[in-house]
Image 1 (cartoon, rainbow, N blue to C red):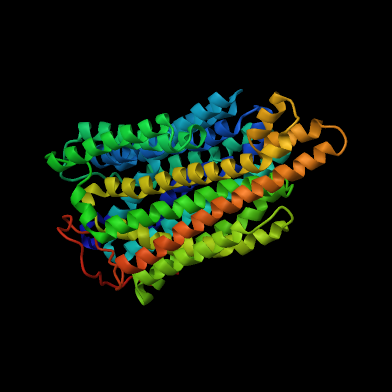
Image 2: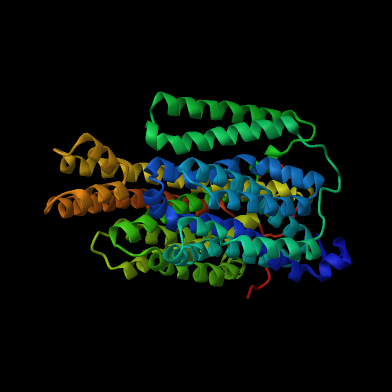
Length: 528
């Protein structure tokens, strides 16, 4: 696609439209990041268990990931601007439901509504971007989009921390309201209507199977830590997910107008980049879930202090992500992605070796290399995915990019949270001997519960239990972060071997390739 293929009025205001798309995307990401800081407050004020806290995080991901393909396809068919605007309105509804919630179930339900809204918003932003920028500029625009996607998630914690220091926990759900209103007003004026020019019919059967398959998979991942990864219920969940996903694949191979053309997976740009994106967010979301609790419950930071400590993450993301295309053009995609993932793994290894006496500022030794590595990696992975998708299916391509993010994030929270919980319970068990059964049950729900029990114990028993619980938590965090580091490092090696060694192409092909290209060669414009 060149500038001559884009309507003149749309082309003329493309750089004014991009901030509106990024603002809409930022709303989705800030909503995810802002909740983490509020988890300890929700645990105290609503008596939420570790499982309920995890569901507050993952209900969003479950609905989001389960509906992304369908929302992307609906946008391609009926209009991406309409999906974007509708999602913003629905987001407001979910936020206001959360504000008046009085128990964990209501918070979880509101997060599900916001997940539905996010499924309408996020793929629409990238699909619209792909159709308003010519190939020569698309790499830079996607880099800015990806930097916003990763960076603005870190703006939520300090804002939420400030609100929690002055108001009640429900105020964290009001953070985005002014931005949603601004995005609606500006979007109505600047965002163009965009949809598949061929008007292909929606694959309703494929949409249903994708929702059931992805939803069942995310549900099984989320519940596995509580039920056990080899329990009958967990294995049944994975079996159901596999059955629906297999049926979805069979449907897409035979459908006249498939929602997702499976030939795309023959292209290494699409398949390897999708896997790399999933594992990157596996590490990022999982580590954020661990660190926000570590800062507050282990090191004793206030919610505001914890949020401010995480604020530089967004600055690193926003500064480095736009540089990713320049690095890919100079050194090659495989080298940039592999080096970025290796840097992220280094940070995770540092995180695995923190302890209960580590100064809070030392968290930067872990987060700077981790965040810097992901910042330069994500734009290349996103561009690789979108470069393999025909323009008329940009919504589905964007949905694939977003689905891998959410599935990876949900898997990270579930797997790393499960490892943490297992190691924590095993290490703390001997310290709970002799306590009443109810107290043992409370302590086993998580570190917040153990600290509550410790406060009620007489003499030195309370401080001793609190110290043991913090040590057990840090042991579990170390195990989880170490596994994430090894996973990301292995992904870096695979990316170096399988991704193209040349420069990154940003042109969108009209038809999916029949086979993976031996190399991809086209220079990107310098970013920044």
